[in-house]
Image (cartoon, rainbow, N blue to C red; front, side, top):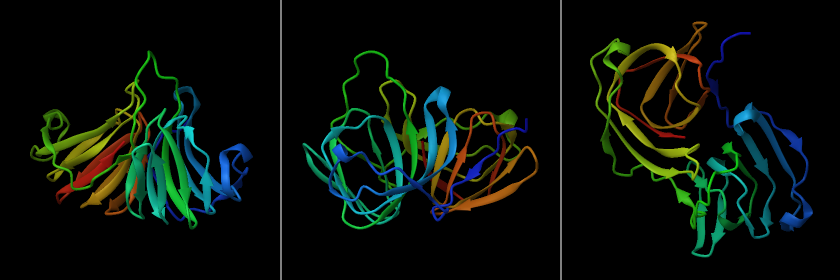
Amino acid sequence: MSAPSFIRVDPAAPLMPWPDMPAHEVARGSGRQWGTMLHQDPANGLSVGVWAADPVECTWFPQPVDEFMVVVEGEIIIDTAEGETRIATGESFVLPKGLFCRWRHEAPVRKIFMIVDRPAPGDGKPADRVIRIDPRTSLEPSNPPDPALLLSPQPTLATKELYEAVDGRLTVGVWETTPYHRRQIPFPRDELMYFLDGSVTLTDGGGRAETFGRGDCVFVPYGAPCDWRHATRLRKVIS
């Protein structure tokens, strides 16, 4: 079996019809939806893909999974006890597992998603708000890569964690670095990256190289051989 590789997440990917949303979850609208799965890891409750739907207003319910999303078309409105949160095209956010909320959108929408669906241990307190990802949030210095892995001078890194699931299996934040080149290594985690500024070139174990820039998304599975190289300052949302 060939080694896993990174996956470019195409927001305009062709989608297949999915079953309509359950009638008990739809307060208004057809409930029609479409999607494509780009990566699934049932053992770890992980899925990544693209989803679209007609205008809909859902009923109030506890969010069943932790989900990070990037809106690529339309505007999504999430109602909670604190009021409404509007997420526009190009913005990203997290719906934490257990959040009591209502999902609605008044025009067709399309999103990129990363879901972690796994029972959390213990009695963690459910989140009480939508986590909007501020791309310009202030960052704090973080540890640079291992010098033994670098093919360039050591970079300066900064990050800010904005959400961590109760079980620690999904963390979302903003990360920034000065230029560097890291040799090919098995990627140490599953990560969906949404690039905010700059560009980077990834090369997989088979020599396939692709460049990702502002507005692009890429998913890198755990263990995928990956070389990382960029010549400008880079900022991304990490999940």
